[in-house]
Length: 390
Image (cartoon, rainbow, N blue to C red):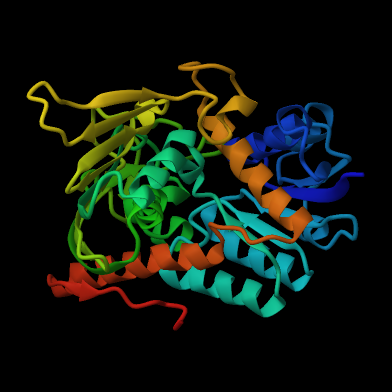
């Protein structure tokens, strides 16, 4: 008998839809699961999305007030997929209601907001998860196993980057994502957080950083009426100031003694979604790029003069891959990573077993972000201090 777990989704934008689809796919993907997800209620301010939630996604009901969904007696777990500025109040309310909480990143657009959410969940004693979904890519999991096995020897250097074009159009509207009090920090909260989480997952604790930032598109057209979040203005439209950073880079030291370099940009032209890492060790190296998610480059140090990088293709011999596609080199996609993370969180709840990444790991990420922010002001190396005080 599988344990039913009632799910509420707060916000049926892209990520809300992705996680809702993941729930619908769960029975066919993971027949050995110990739970059954039940799409109980979806909250969204737009009537069209509420209608879709019921008619297309199969939610039992949809409501306009997210508080009603959070407090519902038939809800066990809340998925927070609304805009950044709503994450903390939603998390606080869900935790106070005794619900487990999955929050898309950033949990808070600013480090102190993530800490507030962490403390609320910790005080309430509820289970948590954060959407660092790239950690669940089967070849990223394999990379971690290779590093842990010693196949790369002693890790000497890590290079992480997330270079994206989503904000590269200077006529892109000045929506909440570019406003400090609404979206929080820019590239560091939105995409560098993924790079940091990958580095901590693969190599370990970061102890000190120094970095820089830049806002490459300082003004954008003001949105009017019911403008789309990714809508486009005209050159003659009135403009407002972008309040957070488009670009950030960072040098760092790891507790292990390894060094690291990081870059993130939401306005760079060329890389469309280049979330990538390179790990260098005394016996080998690894390289992975989201744009080629089903390929891992592996260099093994040998005496062979013809040695070089070998491409490891994804396949069902790696964790979770076989749930989506059998055999070798049959690719899986981005939404499959969300299905893996959702399954893993639900299974951990149903079996009362540990889960990571939780809000604890989110605090680890923003502790690094805060040190980077400090370095912007001091223009010097800054220590990474655990914001949770543990």
